[in-house]
Amino acid sequence: MVWTVLVLLAFVLGLKYGPKGMAIGFSGMSILLALPVCLYAIHGTPVRLGDIARALKHPLLAISIPTALGVFIRMNALNWAPLALRAIAGPGLVLLCYAFILLIALRQWSFYHELLSHLLPSRRTA
Image 1 (cartoon, rainbow, N blue to C red):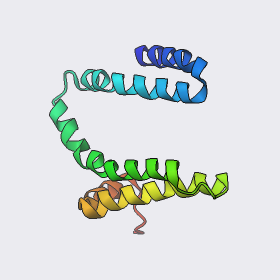
Image 2: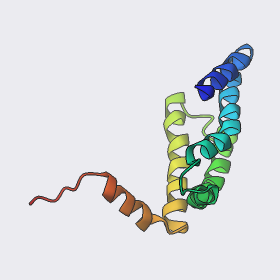
Image 3: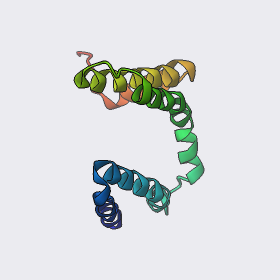
Image 4: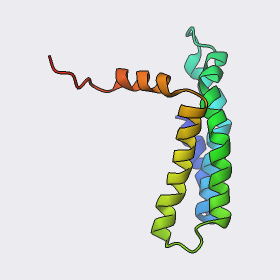
């Protein structure tokens, strides 16, 4: 409930700046609330903040280059292309770059493959 109230407040404060102001308000509030929410979520459990940090290490490393690529694409590239193509190509390139860095360069393929195998139903027949 606290999260909802604070995020709504951030939206309201961003209203006078239009959609970008609302997006910045939401993102900023989410960043500010991330640590307190994590601490609340793990309170009384054997999970520690260091465990969460270790779990986030590879994804955070992997997003650094794709973030720069996304900013570059937004500022300099694909300006000639129709909006629909830019809306697909820009995020697509960023996603492919992120996936390559995370799964191949940081060697996380086996971890995510095993995770998905546990989450998705087996296709084996008896």
